[in-house]
Length: 319
Length: 319
Image (tube, rainbow over all chains, first blue to last red; front, side, top):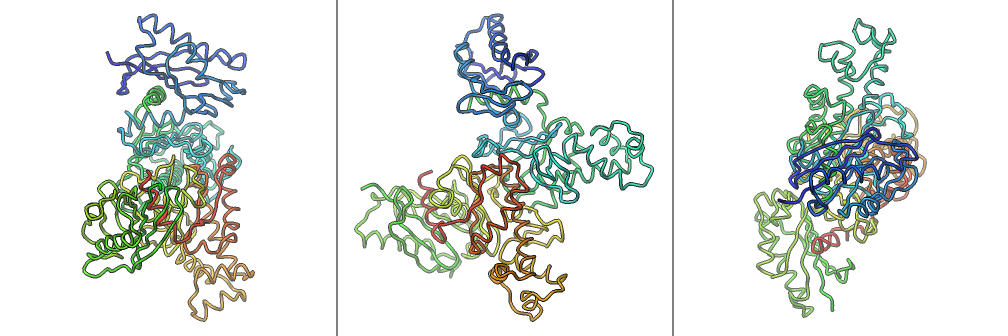
């Protein structure tokens, strides 16, 4: 039997685990609740215990595994195997994760940032189709990303490569971002960003659109509401959709001109809008890329969903 | 004596050669005229003859060299060692450059695109200070570039990575680019682009600026004229300078958010404006980068001048 890999996706709510083949196929997955009490000091011991329990249940030993890979929030030093500043885990101090896990389990351990790890997952067995040049962008509460170039995950000089949410794209009425600057992709293309745009365009809109009524009634509007209404032809929702698509399309076009990846893969909650989202993007993307890029760099939707994290984490072991 | 490298910078006017140490130090350089007659069929034989002549003059043999590296215009297949579509060399057909040179000289041969090779030169011993993460941007007649990430030159899926001149940055009054789209960095930040901006802002300018008079008199205005006048405080020249800086600063900021290189190195003829150019850039750059990027990715001026090509070409041998 060829050796397996353990992939771990550490999040603020749950810790997802999977046992995978070296081809990236998930053979089994499970999860535990993240215990952030006592400055997150239970997290690593809980991970170790959960793996030990799973191994003993299945009669497996450390020799059945090539390694363990993990994606973590916060600032990850992948060389040292440490994490600091992961506020949703209450990890304020430096956590020697690699040291703790390797000494307990005696299996080689690898770690990287969670957005980077999801990028690796989609690149390897997801929408990236194992092409060595793939950019992954996640549109969720915020906008994050990861860049795989020549088969390698890029970190940059200070670990901030792939910070796609902070590309400046809005020169019309730039909104302040949590990062301290204005006009960031995140302020117009995240779930929150779409609500920002809805408020902006609702103000200058004078027609009878359903979305306008919802705003004026003080109802809570979500990105999903906006996309659903746009699909039905709601006037205001279409204005929001068109501008969201324009901003995101320009960001994708400019990323493509710098990196010429085979795919720019769009994931995260907002990407649930599916082909409707891609269709809107494509027009601006085509208008802002020159022929050689336009024909070689494709836009596509992520297809691993929540599994991207554990799969990408596992791929760290094989790098 | 440790072995040397030969670097070649092939251009439409001249072919530059250098003999370098493996540390990137030029020990000797020379050049010959590029003979583009007969569909550029004399070029490779001329290169071979020039190297043979130099070697025999110095009593050197193939065993004194690790390899030969070359930067070429056109579409370069660095794996196959071929070039096609280099119009300034009149190379319309596929040229098996590697095969020709290796069979004549029996020294291992490596080749890449000229802008990429200049990027490698600046990254290795120029302004990039041998940091593994450096982006190079050349502002000349056009705008080109190269990306070195994790010590590797990025090509992308179709060889178009680093096409920095076609990042869209002008949303004010986008000018048509030779690439077929509008608003490209090249239309506002190349030597030609600066003249484009001068014409744009001269039209709406009503004051007494010297630059305005030159335009109105039908005098030929160059990028250098604009920078020189801006340094002297010319009203219109300052407007052009401010907008040029804004467009270029946004492009640099967005490249930094994607790649977080240690340096974005600015070269090419327009960079002769020196620190005055950097100063203008910095303000927009700072306003469009978030703190982690702003403090770790620096803007700097190229410092190898015309030698970047032969030095970067030589570095191909060591990759």
